[in-house]
Length: 303
Image (cartoon, rainbow, N blue to C red; front, side):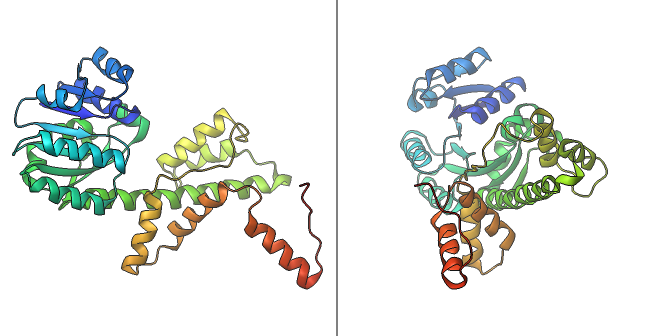
C-alpha cells in the first residue's frame, strides 16, 4: 500500500523504515533534508514539500502526520486540508490533545477528507518490536488503511485497535501516558528507598533484574530500568531533572473535568515539576515558617 509520511523524527523515521520493510510504498517529507535522505536510502521516495509529497501519491491518498503536537500539527493539517481531495485520509500519529483532534476531524470532514487519530506507543523500540496503536475516527477509513496499521503494530495486536469516534484514539493514548507517569514514579520511589537503606548495601541492578522474573511488578519499564542500572549502577551520569510532554497535564485536567479522582497520576505529575526546581521558594518558605514559630534550626544559603 502507498502512504505519505510527514515528519521524520526518530519515531516517524522508524515507522517509515518498518513500512518499507513490510513492502509498502512510502513517500516522505521532513523540513530536514538529511532526514529525508536517510529514509530514501532505506527505499522511500523523498519529497521536498508537503505539496510535492501529495503529488507523488496516487488517489485515494493517505498521509500520516508524525510531527510535534500543537502549532506544527495544526499547520500541517490545515495545509493538507487545502491540498487533498475528497476520499483522502489524514492520520495524526502524534500526541495531540484529543479536543483539538475532534475539532480537526470536523474541519477535514467539511472537505470530505477522513481523519484518523492514532495514539502511538513504542518509542525508539517500535522499529523492531512494533507500535501499540489506538485509533479513532471512521471505521471505514480505519479498515481501508488496515494494511498500514497491521505493518506497524506487533503481530499480536493485528493492526492495533479501533477504539471509537474521532478523538478517542488520542484520548486513550493520553490516559495510557498518565498511567505511565504513575508507574514510573512508583518505581523511582521504590529504588530510592532501597538505596537509602545504606547499611544493607543493596545492589539495585541485581534486585531490578530479579524482579523481572516471576514478580507481580515485572514489566517492560522494569526491564529498561534494569538495563540502565547495569550500565550505571548508581545512575550517577544523570541529573534528577524530568520533563513532561503535556499528556500527563491533560490527563489530570480531564480527571478534574470528569470529577474522577486520579491522585497517583496527579502526584506523579507534580513530582516532575518539583524535579525541575533547584532550591525552590516553597521549600525555603517551609524552612522560614518552621524557624519562625518554633525556633528550629535552618540552613542558610550562600547567596
